[in-house]
Amino acid sequence: MIQMTLIQIDNYGPWTVTPTPRAEADLQILQSELYADLQRQFAAKGGLVFFTRFDNMLAVTNGVDMEDHKRIQKSIGNRYPITISMGVGAAETPYEAQRKATNALQNYGGAQSEDRTEVLAIDGLVKADESFVQIAHIDINGITDSLTDIIPAYDTSFIVNRVQHFLMKKLIEKGSLLFFIGGDNFMSPCNGLNPEGLLKIIEEIEDEINIALKAGVGKAPTAEKAANLADLALEEIRGGFTYNLVHVMKNEE
Ligand SMILES: Nc1nc2c(ncn2[C@@H]2O[C@H](COP(=O)(O)OP(=O)(O)OP(=O)(O)O)[C@@H](O)[C@H]2O)c(=O)[nH]1
Image (tube, rainbow, N blue to C red):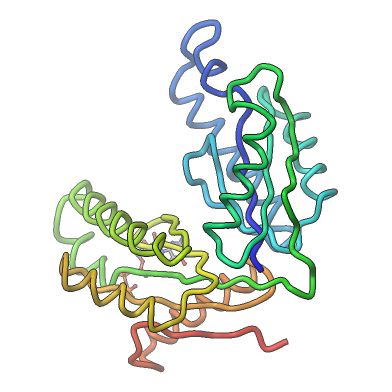
């Protein structure tokens, strides 16, 4: 079972334009600092936050309990000019877990409802003995040599965004999520997706847009361990220890 948390800034839209539109640079600083702050606090408990849309962030939070969520929520409220509400859900697939988390929060009212602040809506938490996270770290082959050092930076960004769209569209059909994490890298919480299914998606994308991908897959009880195993599996592909385009590493504990 995987646990996903939706982190939503309370009543953020109206706040950004009250009393007049706030300087965009200040909003970018706030969003970036909030993301880093949440990443640090959830990572301390083995979680992993994806910036998603910044006003709405999704995190894999296996091992992060109700008290942990409350403490993080209170800490943000103490130090920021905004507050956050959170929804938590658990399921066999990441898509279903985030759907439950979102629905739990939506039941407390709208994102811009003035009556809804610092809500913690828990649909379900993963039990320790059922905690399982599968994460794929997906990377574009040789982007530095083939694109970054060759074509204009914006054109490379366009291609990376196109790859992201194709991956999201194909992975959502398997109940998996996909997040851009920087450079030419994506992470996919993908409980329930077998390596053959991921390989098929990689092959389809190469056929459709001529972009070669590779993926390390990590399986562990927490996001932190699964992501690290995915990184190690990806390094094994880079290092030529395997010629597979999808390489899996499991938690040995
Ligand atoms: N967030 C994140 N970014 C990474 C990671 N590894 C690389 N990057 C980013 O991705 C960019 C490209 O790095 P690489 O993927 O190693 O370069 P590459 O040219 O694709 O080489 P290969 O991946 O070996 O084919 C770097 O400039 C970083 O911005 C990672 O593990 N996490």
